[in-house]
Image (cartoon, rainbow, N blue to C red; front, side, top):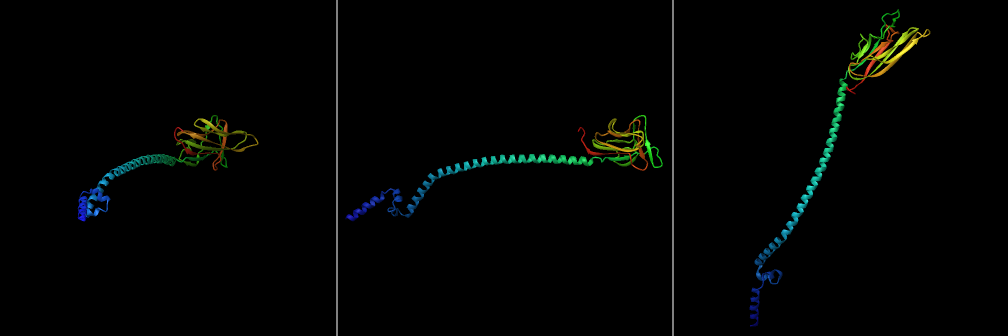
Length: 261
C-alpha cells in the first residue's frame, strides 16, 4: 500500500518537472529519452551560438576594417615613397642623358672641324750662285709672300698672296723665323692680324755681324675670315734661299670655338 502510493506520487512529480532540469540534472535525463534530450540540446546550442556570434562578427569586422585602413595607409606611404624615389631616379637619368648628348655634340663638332695647319718658306726674287738672295728694303711696309709651301692642310694659306685666312672660329698658333745675311742693315719681320701688328723681330746688323736668325710667335683667337700675314717693315730686309728653307712662316688651329665665345 505504501509502495504503490509512493510510486504514483513519484510518477505525478515526474510529469511536472521543467524541461531545463533535465539538462542540468543528469539523474533525471534518462527519464525523457535520448532523442528528446538530443533535440533540446541542439536548440539550446543554437541559441547560445546566435547570442555569441554577433559580438564575434563585430570583432572580426572591426579587425578587418582596421587592417584595411592600416594597409591603405601603408600603401599610400609606400606609394608616396616609391613615387619620390622614381622621380629622383628619373631626374638623375635625364640629367645624365643631357650630359651625354652635349658630349656627343661636342665630339661631332670637333670631328667635323676642318684640320688647319701650314708651313711655308721664303724664296728670294734674285739669288747668287749659292741660292741666297735678299728681299727688300722697300719704301713702305710690304707683305712677305712665302711661295714655297711645305704643308697646307685645309688650304687656308695662300702662297700667291702670303696671307692666311681663318676658315673657322678658333684659337690658332703662329710662329715665324727670319734669316739675314747682310751687314749695316735693319733686319726683321712683323706678324699682323688683319691690319694690326701683333709681334715683331728686329735687329740692326753692324759691320762685324752679317748673319743672324730671329724667331717669334703668338697665339691668336680668330673669327672666320680673319687674316694673318708677315709684313716686312719699310727700310727692312730679309734673306731667303732658293734651295733651303731658312725664313719660314707656320701656323695651325689649336681648337675650334663657338661663335660669340
